[in-house]
Length: 206
Image 1: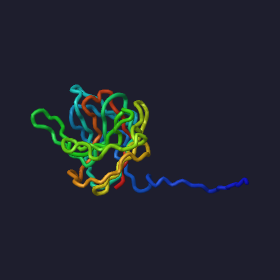
Image 2 (image 1 turned 120 degrees about the vertical axis):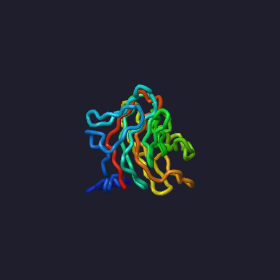
Image 3 (image 1 turned 135 degrees about the vertical axis):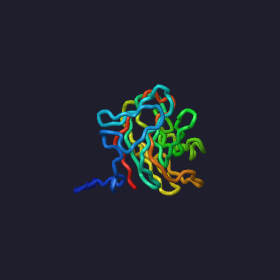
Image 4 (image 1 turned 90 degrees about the vertical axis):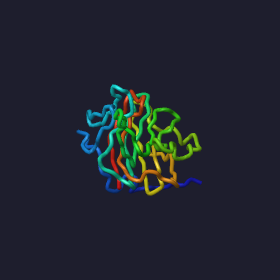
């Protein structure tokens, strides 16, 4: 027996994009951000480009504004090998002897490896990885390969954190012993990230 179905007036509502998302990058300058370390952050053709500086060391671009609970998202394009990330609930101090930036915060990992740790969460200088590795291989490695655009999104509500890479949920975990509670967002150039990374479409929902 043959059945037929008829559809009309189909509409799509992306629940992840509703609400008052605020842009944290105006596409023209680094207004509202501060550079820490010797790595370079420039605005070119409407995007932020992070490149290794003379020391090829760690560097950060940190928002002046701070948040506790939020959703944040940004589009990234890795220009080659390296280790990058979107930090949250972060503050930075400079080491007295050499000005090296010491960050207190949590990194939403962005890594060109496949499969890799993109979308995982790492607490620098303290506890390291904050959750077990995702059990399914199919849930790993969804970062865009170098020279293509991808997106990371992170939601923090109290002790619970969820992250997505390109719309796919990677981790959803509860932290029983949080160490940081409030801070800014930071774009990271890790030591060895010499090829650089581009960022655009940075938005936050409080």
